[in-house]
Length: 490
Image (tube, rainbow, N blue to C red; front, side, top):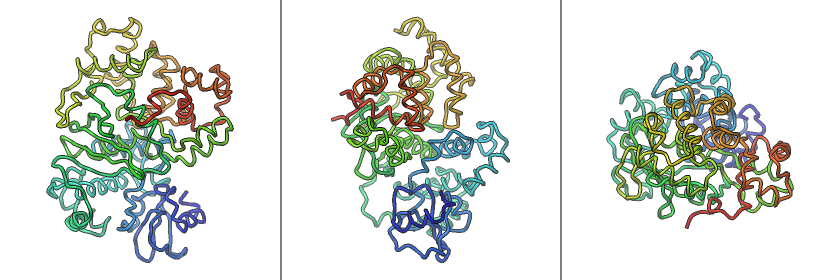
């Protein structure tokens, strides 16, 4: 969008928050870059240039606005709606792969050379993978500076910087303030008292957001010991690269309140990225609802509660295991099966608030499980053990950089994986916004009540009008049934 100057200028003039994260406005006279909805008086048209990413602005010598804080904008919805190599690279960079494995590791995951990835990202985003990761490190550092009392040296290494000097130089360059000045500004603002070891932050999103089905689905399917709904917050344990964590997510009118407790602060970037992905916070609800509303049979559902998101996951491998456990059984039975697996094979953790007891077991931890110990039909035991072996052995990869169609083909080749299981994994674990479940009983019932075709083939043909947002159409169709997944828990 940043190449359409006229459209960008209109968005800046109208301070339209829907475009935050789509592009960034750099002001030639002040050398500052802003989000489109920045509250200051817009500059003259001739003094504005537009960039596709904050990293591109920083590379061009601009620093972040202190009023609108463009570095905290929601992420571009493109990266979660596309399946090409650039989108996959951005999802991996957001998950911290460059910090952990470097550019060669990023390229290897995508199946390209480092030079090809560099060229593709530069062409589309105006910045290479190192610059994009550096911009993300700067934002992580700002969160740690403003929300914790960690010494600056610990903040530097937790944010992924190789030295304190690089950390200081980057913070000054990006924010035009020294790290100590950033902390001083934050301490003068109205803040809740800090809890030692807990990082509190706000996760922004594009309005509207309807939290009912999002948190309702997560709470209704919560695995005992791993997830819970308590005091208006969805809480769960997280398995992270350097340790584990516990997160509490609460819906607010203009943001999601997030409280993170991490055993290693180096995992902050990954924890935030996974929470945003879990709640689908980078979606563009105006574009999604606009297309679905064009169908006269879906329009009343969209108008009744616009802004529904697709509840996703913090760990694709975990969700794949849970999808197999949930085949052809009720939600309560699926929770029971998953809870038994967690108790037997999950890593115990301490939760100061009580309620959460384990991490969900990794594929490696499940690789040696005894199929006879599972209270499942023999065929589903074989499905589960085959899936776990493929995930643990690396022949099947389900992560942020996975090619969606290739993953579908690999899952379909496993015994016991029919269209429903493959598509629910594509929808919630891989994040494909066009995944669709025409064989799902709830969707078929909704189709009958609305006057849509109810057979899988006919419904799939009709759903072509909803592409590429069929996963969101499914969320609206499920609301036809009065099920707990559709309502914010009490």
